[in-house]
Every structure is written in C-alpha cells, then in structure tokens.
Length: 462
Image (cartoon, rainbow, N blue to C red; front, side, top):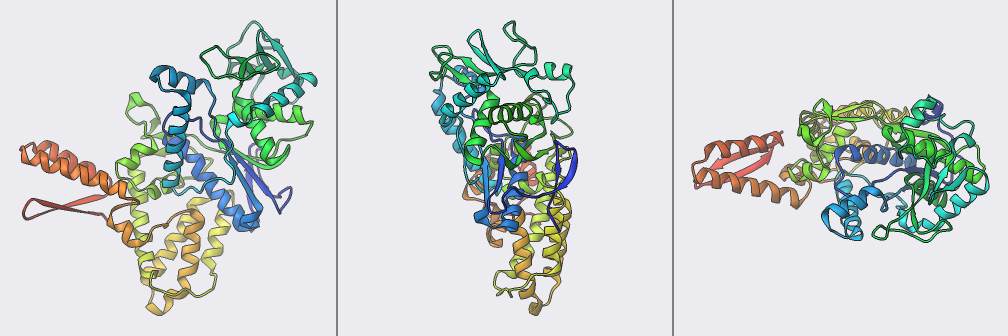
C-alpha cells in the first residue's frame, strides 16, 4: 500500500510522492523552552515520531531528514526569566534538557537535526531584507512587519476570512501597521531583553520568521512535509508560508501539511485551575510508564481531538502488559527471517494516514497468537511482532524490567518513596493517609502486598 497523508492545505488525503526519494524531508515545530512540556506538547512529538519511523521504513534510514526546532528566544521565555529571576540562558538550557529527557521517556527518537532559533539570527535578518526588497515587508516605529495584502492568496492554509485573520493576529493591532493583519518580522529589544544588531536597530525576531529560517536552512526552500499541532495552523503556519514563499519566490513551502488534533484532559480544556493540567514530567514522576503515555496519545487517530484521562492511561498500561507477556515468551526464542500478513497489515494501517488504532489491533492479534502458540510456532512469530512494535515505538524494555516496576530506576525510586510515606502514615495511625497513598498507587497500576514484619512489596498489576 502507498503512503497517503491528509494534507491540510488541499483538505484531502493525498498519495505521498517525495520531491527526492533519496532525501525525504520533514519539519515539525518544536517547543518554546521556558517550562516543562505538558501532555498536549507531547502529542505532536509522538505522532510525528511514528511518521518519521514509517518514512525510514519506506525510504531507508539514511534517506530521511527529520528536523524539529528549539525556540529559545521568545517573549514567554523573557517573562519566565523576569518572574523567576533566573537568567534566560539557564532557563532555556534547563528546560531543553528536561524536554529531551521527557520525550525520550515517551519513546520518541531524537530528530536528525535540532536547530535553535538563536543560532539562525543571521538567516532571519537576510530573509527579512529580501522581504522588504520584494515589497512584502516594511519598517515602522522600530518594527519590521510583513504586509499581508502583498500576498494575494494569503490565508489558503487556514481558510480564515479577512476578519478572522485580523482577530487571530498574534500581535495586537498597532497604529504603525499599514494593515491590521500585518504581522511582526522583527521588533526592538529593551536593554534588559535579548537582542541582536540588525539594519533596523537592536532587536529580536518575531516568532514566525524563526521557523521559516530554520526550515529553509536545513531542508531547502521547498520540502516534503511540515507538521505540527492544529493550534499552529493560524497564525503560525499561515505566516510561515507567506514569509517563505515571498522571500524565496516559490509556489509552495512544503508539499504536504499535517496537523494533529487538539488535546483535552478529563473532558475539559486542560487548565491548572481545573486540576487537569498534566506535564509529562509530573506523570512520569507519579509512576506512569512512558510507553503507556505514548500509547494513550496514539490511541485515537492523530487528526481527531483526544481526551487524555487517567482511565486511558490505565487502559494503555493494561494493553502493554499483554504485549509484554507475549514478548516474554519470545525472549529466549531464535527468530526465523520471515515476514507475515500481520506485519504487512500494520504497515498498511500506518500508510493510511497513520491509522494507529488499526495498527494497535494488529499487534493485539499478534500478541494473542504468541501467547496461544505452541513452542514450535514461536520463531516465525517473533520477528514480525517485534518489528511491528518497533515501528510504533513500544516494547523497548525487556519483559522482566517492565513487570519489575517501570521504565527506569527513577520510577522505582518514586514508588518506593510513596510506600515509605504510607508505612510512616500507618506507624502514626494515620490510616486515611495510608489508604490514600495505596489508592494513588493503585490508580497507576501498582499493587501493594503487606508482608509480616512491616514489609511492603509491590508489583505492576496485570
């Protein structure tokens, strides 16, 4: 089956035809590094990790270039530094490191190239100069802005009306704008803000020009796929297209635009005030395995809205328990070098616009076959089962490690600490607190067994 992708720009599913099969190029918008990544930030990382794996399977690992950027200059970062008193460089380094750790825990492979915005300021300035020269940009009141009416087909990606374009602009309407929809390419920096010398004075780039410059630098003026969350369609991706096409004189920026759907949490928009705001770091520290988070994020088709709940985590964990039981039967088996219909079925499911739900059903079927097979039949099942799991980015642990209690020593440390707190609560006869801790661990799939002598042992349920 040929890979088919739903293209946001054309609003239809299209057969994927790379510009150059020897160098398939994918760009995905990465994080603005000022705080821990929340579970909504993780969804595109996991989705496009599966896509990158699939592209490498089709075209070869050496023929795919996956770029995901780091935005390390932004007003959110400046605000975080002002509120905390921590230097900007310290914030960006700390949160970038945490981001890498958290995404790795979800089984996401690192991109081939991870450019940082601050390393591409010169290219941004050069792009802005070309836009001004071409009549698409202008300087006003210390700012440089993109003049939206200079691009007749601006708005095709989002389909937004003129009023929606103005209302959704990232920067408020200002008196120095020629048109209310015009957006910032460069803005002045105060003395205590990060800034770089430019033809328009000391300043810093607007958000949108950063990705245009980084994508152009590492993938060229036209490339295959641009991805990101649905919330980036407008204004970010719309403005990327405008800047890139007008600066480079091309008909397109990317041939295919892919966007994952919104994420809800416990049936509501994720919000700290509602108590349903989850960072990846928080969920991992609570003891949830990273692979369970990954499976929950992939449980619904990527273009659909996803309601992320603790119930969905429990379901994902239970599913992985069964898959790992199947893996346990295979770990001492020598695989035969053969594919089977389930291996082809899983690839066909992913080729159909990343139908991960159907792919999961295929691995379910394979796990059942492994668990129910005679010993003699296991060698033929091993290779296809494990290759399918690898394509989805799961079953990376040995089965003993999985059932021993999680994905890392850090997980076990957190669980052991909670058990110690429970024992202390029981010692002071605070049985309500002890029961609360037991229930908390049970929600995460941890079963406690109280032994004689005041010893408590634990295991994963399933």
